[in-house]
Length: 390
Image 1 (cartoon, rainbow, N blue to C red):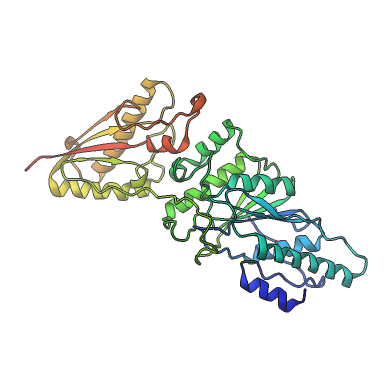
Image 2 (image 1 turned 180 degrees about the vertical axis):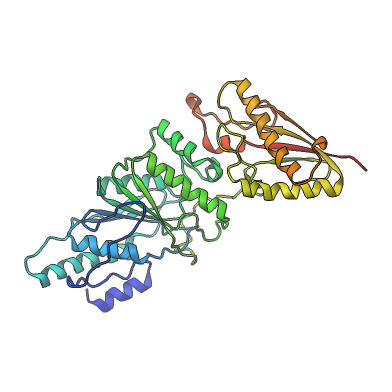
């Protein structure tokens, strides 16, 4: 394949601009802090070219890594990420040749064939998205010491990690990895480095995620990678272009919608409103964001001359008396902020109910395994607002 045709294929699709393999041109060593990534180890490239994610754009460092791996005569594997991830390129590494020109030509032909695999096979074929499965089969190819580059939104839509139906989007990352470990669903990433590119970035019809949910998507996968024995690195690069394909269909993951404080009514302050708590703690997951939300509540209470009864709740963790005590401390944490924002302390009452309240959602699965998404939903404070003056 000549270079003009290779360039045409590259421009037409979503592959990197593969460098010509002149062995005299040095390839910069990739820097994927905190992971150690080397050119002389196998690599797998996992790409979500599917509905609901932007058309992938390959960072320069990833392009350099691929070229360096090929020059080192190590294999590169391409994995299509959809509902049923598959290898789309898994040839043996190019054989080394004694003649430098012949060696460079062999490497270039290898990269050319990989380019054709991008063109013909990388686009999604099966509905939905299974990131865990893609990581599993990529890991099997690279082995310990190898590198996996994952380019996708990270919004898995199939069990056991449905970001939408199972509320994983708002779940505590450590609880997600603990859940997968207990269910024996973690991939074996021991000794592997996983470079995460574009996590949390979406394309219509998938709604855009605000920065806090984008961050949580990355944190979830970082926790999963580390629990599986790997090292996770984030690349601050991602595409915002339209999706490469519109079909097959992928379920939409709807971010939680914040609830505005009601006049003389009840409002549940949970993860959608930044009033979410760390597991087994009365500490806010994001104190600054929680204060911003509670400023709006304080303004409403002040304007309408309201008083509030704050009821704390918990997930199904620990003995019931401990849940009640923890939930009371969560209600007290919200009161502390409201008082600091100028609401008289004598207009606020607090109590804890643990899991004993009508709005509690089931957060235990078979074998009493804690379900991370529902558990996060149960860590909240419910504010019942009543008017002092009509």
